Amino acid sequence: MPTQLERARDGVVTSAMGRVAERERRDPEFVRERVADGRAVIPNNHGHEGLDPMVIGEAFATKVNANIGNSEDTSDPEAELEKLHAAVHFGADTVMDLSTGPDLDRIREANVAHSPVPVGTVPIYEAVKRAGSPADVTRDLLRDVIEKQARQGVDYMTVHAGVLMEHLPLTDGRTTGIVSRGGSILARWMEEHGEQNPLYVDFPELCETFREHDVTVSLGDGLRPGSLADASDEAQFAELDTLGELTGVAQERGVQVMVEGPGHVPMDEIRDNVDRQREACDGAPFYVLGPLVTDVAPGYDHVTSAIGATEAARAGAAMLCYVTPKEHLGLPEREDVREGMAAYRIAAHAADVANGLPGARDWDDALSEARYDFDWRRQFDLALDPERAREFHDRTLPGDNYKEARFCSMCGAEFCSMRIDRDAREAGEGMTDLDDETDLDASPAAAVNLPPVGTHDAERLPAWPPEREGPNDASGEADD
Ligand code: SF4
Picture 1: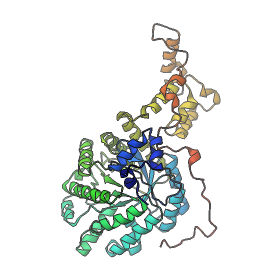
Picture 2: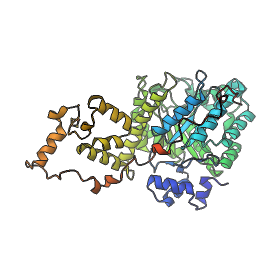
Picture 3: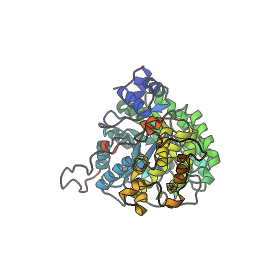
Picture 4: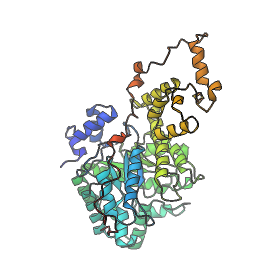
């Protein structure tokens, strides 16, 4: 079956392209053109049933990925599904299952089966797990793992194929060395075997598997900087040039491609990083991990990175990988997922507004009009995190009567500036004429009932809790 890229090149608007055009308020032909020339991807494994197609590309709404998955120290498949549910509930456009603990296959298959959004993986994690150590990974094992995960319905895979032997000495003087898990594993493998990166050597062959299942390749940045001191260095950009070469290799074979980026980058270098990726990779979608704009705030890295992510999206990055408050400190839990998603939904939306994305500002205008009308219920419904907004309001003014109040507890009734302003306008005291109420129905914002794209209606989420197969289902089955 042809990939979305191949169909687009043939001039065909697929049902997936039609669906993303509807979600993005774009013409289907606009979507097809961008997929055809590699500037957008629709991660959509042929085997992922129940997926609601979405598009990643500079011309479309900025997307947010949430990383989920277990580690050696935590292994509860139900908890993993709960994280998936939380990520989608709080607005994730894609999820990456980065599990490295037990039950890898069951967790991955459950995630694909329950996820309405594309699921990504990093196959080398499973290869290391099965081999027992990075040095014991073989080329055959890597191919087997990628083939199996493609059959399981994974929509996109991160492969660190651009880390080459000749790049490794360039990291010698770094403050934080190689911080990418995939990058460090492959560097160790190359040093141990004295051979080139197997993902690079076998990349054309691996593309056959990606093409067969329409798995989108996410070219990993294994040499991304892990500190401001290492940002924009020779190692990072040498790898980026290789990623540009691999982008062409994959696209020639009909495989959809996006490219991953840093990491930790000072604010003033972010735009240059995006421009450089666009040039090196011929406009393939850029998927950035943050970047964090300062290294001094462990515990708050969802904030440090959301600042960088906003700047990156403003400059043209197409997807942002969220960071939670636990970054550098521990495995995130549900509340961390919520905080990280909120920070990144804000980053993505702020960039979309500034970039003039069609419909993006309508959401802000609708909320502002509801605010000036003291329509508290509509404010909550329109809020990026309605539960949080309602909870904070109700902590001090819980009664139903306060849902029509012309003030809140922040300034109080007497000093509510919006009430004072409205009263003055309504009394006609020489100020601009104002209707009794803002006419929401006449406003372009009236059409906005939900955030424009990327946020799933709760009713469309997979059932929770998930159906259980039986009492023995949660027992520790080997992952392969
Ligand atoms: S009390 Fe202050 S914060 Fe609350 S609605 Fe009025 S102006 Fe806004």
